[in-house]
Amino acid sequence: MQTRLSVNVNKIATLRNARGGNLPNLKQVVLDCERFGAEGITVHPRPDGRHIRYSDVYDLKKIVTTEFNIEGYPSKEFIELVLDVKPTQVTLVPDPPEALTSNDGWDTLKYADFLKEIIHQFKNSGIRTSIFVNPDAKMVEHARSTDTDRIELYTESYATNYTTDRDAAIAPFISAAKKAEELNIGLNAGHDLSLVNLHFFNQQIPNLLEVSIGHALICDALYYGLEKTISLYLNQLKK
Ligand code: PXP
Image 1 (cartoon, rainbow, N blue to C red):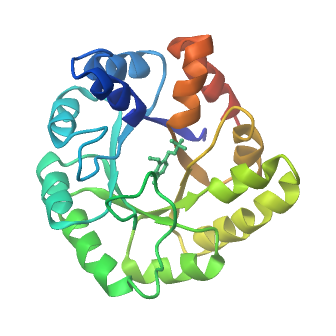
Image 2 (image 1 turned 30 degrees about the horizontal axis):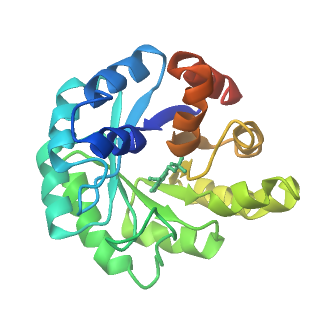
């Protein structure tokens, strides 16, 4: 089965917010991403609303016809939002409110009970759960005790090290992915994936179900256009 591409549209909202109007039109971009072949839409609302706002999440829920994935730190407000909107998937990240972007995975040992309680609430509402973890087999092992459906491997280190030694860069991800498979945990991945490094990652991780990609994809769209860019990313994901 081909790995699904979920397009993270946070950057579209960032651009819109820079001028205060409705250009680019986030809803139209989302519809177009799906029309061009995206198999999911990801949003990451942050408490200060500097890119995706809570109101955007409600608007997008009405129009997304593929898989809707909401990422974020599980604050009280975030949990209420997700339970209300009922996306296909929620991805829990441990980033503090002021973080520029997600910058670490969960310590799944320390936060196992905290995560388990929240994950049960989401699963009871029919929402698939995923938690953001570093490529560390121990962290994957402890993720099992949270009862999460999936984990999302944090790929920043892979992307950074890819150009110097791609085999070394992928090694911890292969171990983490094998552990996830052994424990029957579904596998997603994201952060800094791009046309440069995506194909190799996907080839090396056979149980990869989904990638969520924002920054590089939107940057590529400046040169290739959105339609061509999405097709280029989909091509990288062919097994
Ligand atoms: N996964 C998570 C948990 C994220 O926070 C982000 C960035 O918002 C991504 C994936 C996508 O990362 P990028 O924008 O670098 O593709």
